[in-house]
Image 1 (cartoon, one colour):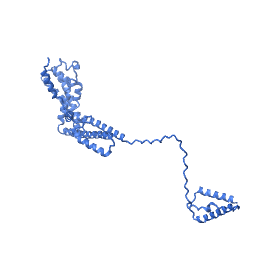
Image 2 (cartoon, one colour):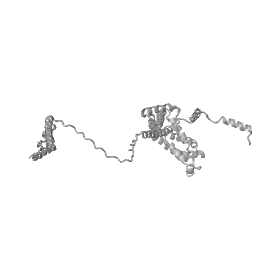
Image 3 (cartoon, one colour):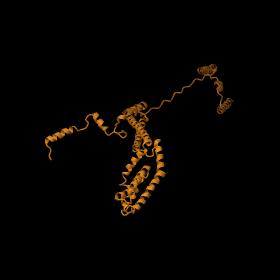
Image 4 (cartoon, rainbow, N blue to C red):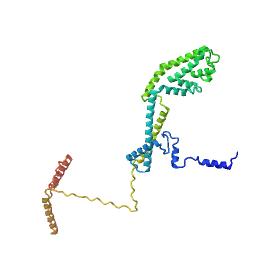
Length: 360
């Protein structure tokens, strides 16, 4: 069927009204349509209830670490975002624990009965595993006993089960449709007495399991949940635990990247300038001689001056110079104030003996 021009124009005008948000604020609001808690939001999308917390964490990190460039600032923003989400996730985990503790104190049996109904809905499709799961709790055993009690009504009047009742009895026992025909008591030809014996056997076993084992365990589990240690935490609590693990990993990786990027690197030394001239010899360092101060400096200087004057006169007059009077080193230099060690004392004695030998 062809469309007229008027209809086509009308469709185009209507389509212009369904293009979605146009402004930046409208697009930002549309991005938050499917936002629930914001634990898994990515690409810089911060939930409205975490904006103030992220800014606070970011300012604290800036004051503590003082970013030196844009990359440092960006890494600190990632750390602040992960820290704010992690704080909120831990807050929600504590709230979930408080909620489970309150419900354990106020409506424990009702919550367990609702969980049993959700499990029992899969009983016709998978009777073996579903019946086993129902027998794990006392509430599930009560659900099974209620069905066996309903199946006992026709047996009291000696009326055998019909096909629907036989299928129900088989699923309560965990028998699938493939094994139903091989079970003699559940066959169409089975008598009501055999079916009554089967029902009593199954009901007694379920009742004994519930009273002897499951009810004490249920009371202990309820008490632990009331104290904040649930053995069967809710799906929301397990989901938040996974979010916490992921956020802690993101926080750790961003912080490690910041510290690694901020680590000081060794500064390369500047190379020496290349020249075509051969380096000349280095000048020898000048030795600075300290003047020797002695207590007898005046007498010794006077003696040396007189000898030098006589030597100069002999050279000028071509006269044989007078013999210089040699004096031991100990007489011209003062003795050290500090005591000599053994090695120095032996060297001094050896020099004295050598001087006496030369003097002879």
